[in-house]
Amino acid sequence: MAVAGCDLQSEPESGRAEPAARDCPAKTFEPGKFIPLPAGSYVKGADPLYPEERPSMRLRVEGFAIQAHEVTNDQFAAFVEATGYVTEAERAATSDDPRAGSAVFTRDAKGMNGRWVLRKGATWRAPEGTGSSIDGKGRHPVVHVTLADARAYANWAGGRLPSEEEWEYAASSGLPDPANRFSGAVDDKGVPRANHWQGVFPIRDEGKDGFSGTAPASCFPADRNGVHDLIGNVWEWTDSPADDAHMIIKGGSWLCAANFCARYRPAARQPQENDFSSNHIGFRIIRDVAAPAPGTAR
Image (cartoon, rainbow, N blue to C red; front, top):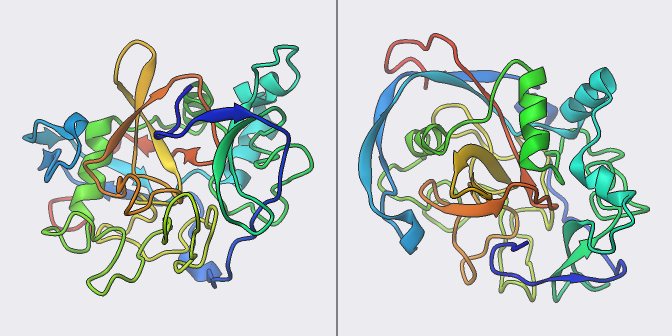
């Protein structure tokens, strides 16, 4: 398993950094809200930075409705309560296989010098591993979900995962400044518009955006379409394959930094193993519904 260029190691749990303070008003969060997007075209792979983002091409996408925020812990908990579903990470937690586990990005007791570890017992209910919990984090995006887990939720919720093209169309059309592909992450003055890493990765996260981990859904301003957190916070599964064993994830996460990956852009794409889960990958769903006339979705 590979995680955005970092090496995974099996290791006991270590110190964890607490997120910095930021106010996330309840009024900015509308649970389960969907935003209708009209059919249209966009440039896939616009302003590519990495080879896998090429070639750039104009594509047309049919209209759909996209959930305005990532699937949250509360939403996923409702799914589990209704169906009894057990995630792949939860099954790994009870496995006798010493290689079983889910990926956790962890830091020392001072919140610095981060690295990836494969942690048995890390699940959506216990994002940092055994002893951690999601108490008080019902609004945070669910993590430690594989492609199969995300698909199961989407089917239960009456939706589906977006294709890479649908996801990128939504993110591109919603950019605050369409001419600046980084505008979903920072404004013209460099102030964060999304939850990502400020500082030198993986040494120190300065937390200028108010977080050093996941942020509650819809804490940051919506884009021009009214959609939150397509950029940053957590990578999002799509239903587009990179090859037989990998699917494309999009959007970057709270771990994306200017010095490391700069994948907090609509064009950025990452192949990820289908059965992989971590504390920086989540998802959102879309629905096939009639969309409004062009110009009314914003």
